[in-house]
Image (cartoon, rainbow, N blue to C red; front, top):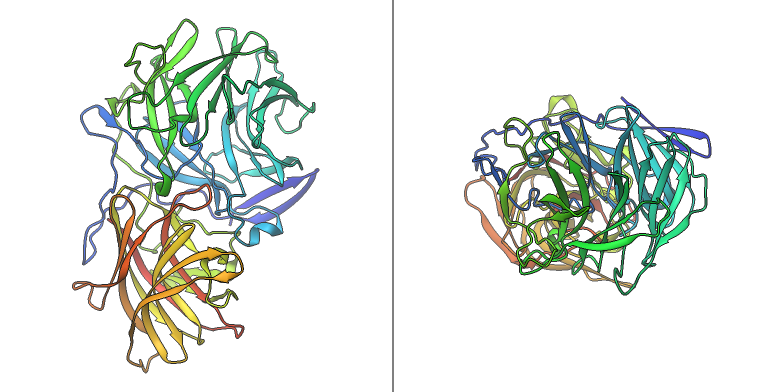
Length: 548
């Protein structure tokens, strides 16, 4: 098993990680109920693409070009493994190839710390090494380095600081290294000098920009140098209603002048901003950014870029006001050839020896939570992990096994074999956000049931509600096999179904409106828990998980 190193103040702690490369191609195979289909395909197959290029919550994206390859990273917040790394050959067709870390080396992340974790990473390539910089709200500034972007990565804590955010580096022509970053809710940008290897700060930082009237809520800076100018790309105006600003100066410490280069205009793309700007070998420039879609999270768009009078213009200037607006369809980037259509992984047959890269837990993962493909079973085994919040309130459950919503509308189906070992065991399929709903097999004093539940977090209260249940006949072998499905309509209304034969499905409960999480979109996936003070030997085995 590969090792990931974590370095803090020159001490190195090793912790095992999953191999970085897995599922490097989308596997199209037939199940009895449906074939695996791509939920959202941006490549139109005719030399053009449509936005978004990824209809999933890859928030705060940043990109780097290395040779003929493009790599993207995105925020993860509290979910693990963290900071996904995606690969593309044409900026349209993307696939997950790894994560920067499998867990964060702080005890607080052993439980869900909603909204914390990694914020707005940046990725760069320097001296044949990949660098990813990121901050967490309360544990500090980090840099991860790797020779292979799929991993393993070596993680270094550069500073134990409070409320820093959104760091981005620049190696200047004279070999000096710099780091620009923001401060949480401060509408301000700072510049630090770093050691040439990019691993240490050499200064406390200097304020280089603050203008609440012109560019309020400025954050997420990304730095580059072109034609003797220092440019800082910085979103402003807020996540849902903001725009993309660009700062420029002949001196890295400023003063900087600012210009808005992309806004909503007359389009339906709210808050188009925060992303990565790249130049292709063909001379084309492209900007990849997010749009906040509430329950779907911050989905990824891409805009063509032209340079005018020393400023980048993103999208298309429809109103001739000097500010670009997002395009919904455009010619694909000129990368010299056509590449196969791919999308980030979703469905999983659980036949591999390592977890699929589309899956994330809600906290630092623990080995006893699961077993995968043991004895070539082709199944995922989730153990009934104790969660002592009376009814198993999912807000506090770390071992939720989830993935991002992959499209405006989709269905997810799984085959579960439930083997309870206690009187408060639950396992099934879940839609998770600030509020949540799930369909599970579960035990209580009256036996084994199949039930649809809704839940929400209220301080000092566990508002987990059973909406409808079906009591099951006692099984002498102790195992209960069902097919569980959730259908998510455009807009997030979610309906649960169950079946014994994977052919005839019966609706259960009532429709549930999916809700975003804390800085993340809604997620879909699986879980298993025990809400009793008495430990359970129970578990559930999942044969496959199909997104269609």
